Length: 98
Image (cartoon, rainbow, N blue to C red; front, side, top):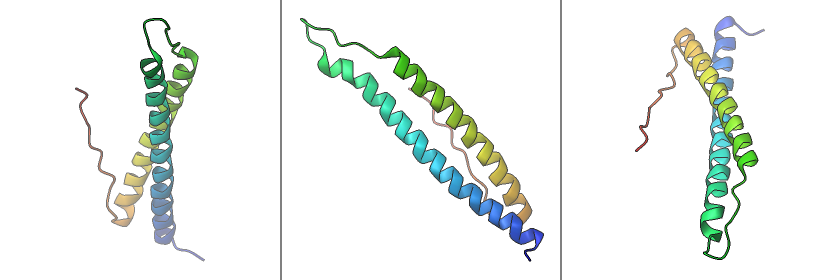
């Protein structure tokens, strides 16, 4: 039988594991979007214009929005468990766009 403290620690650790996966998925989606943007730039010439796939970009942006919400929820949950079991919190650093 596990105690409440052990359950909290397990939830905390599971949250970190899930956060790691979510951040990796977010990174992959960002790379896909970056690749999608670069394709027309690489293929552009005066005699031909490369098509930008708006539908695909919109789908990627939607997936990024969903994974962003998931990450925010996981951070809140991890920090809640961190307070309960005395573990380190997730620190969020905001980066400003140029």
